[in-house]
Image (cartoon, rainbow over all chains, first blue to last red; front, side, top):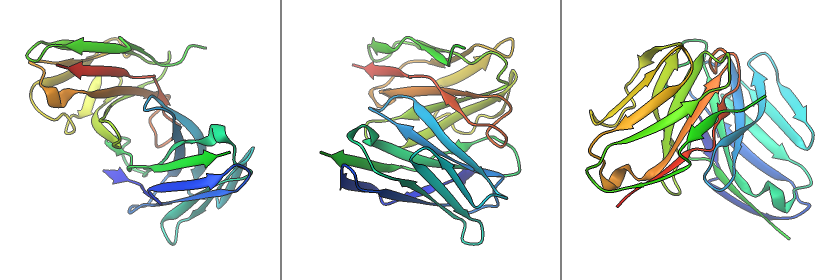
Length: 112
Length: 115
């Protein structure tokens, strides 16, 4: 099985500031994905970065991947109150897609 | 198109009763996953389907839990003789070819409360 671990567990910032979350994993990966969850319901896919990519952007999101350190970071720029949510990473290795396990996530609170 | 649909959205049941949770994945998605999330916790993997086959059932917490998928589409998670510790949000996700190639699309979950 594979499991990403997010850091920090909780993050509180003011609107307009940047938020950085980190993810570490243990096995060789095919890709790494970031998800957001609001109010304990379904997760929403944010961005997928493949193992041969080092950086990817989507709107205010920037994801980096360092396969030598087995780590990834998610940067949210110019945060908004609506960004308040839990953020999870999911690492997918080159083997089977079974038993994909999420970490406990980073709980981001953006205050006005 | 339509996303992943789960029903019911909420279910309250008495301890000892059986419950059946349903997941309608996105059409054409071959991979389907069930997760459980207790209040304030992370996601606990339950079972994964590729087509109608479940190559990995190791996450099912006990023999009271079972799941099936028919026609490579709809999946049902059944919990027999429910216990209070079964109370959680049960999330279903589907993926076009599996997460090693494509992202997971989640439903909004079924919130199960066992009284």
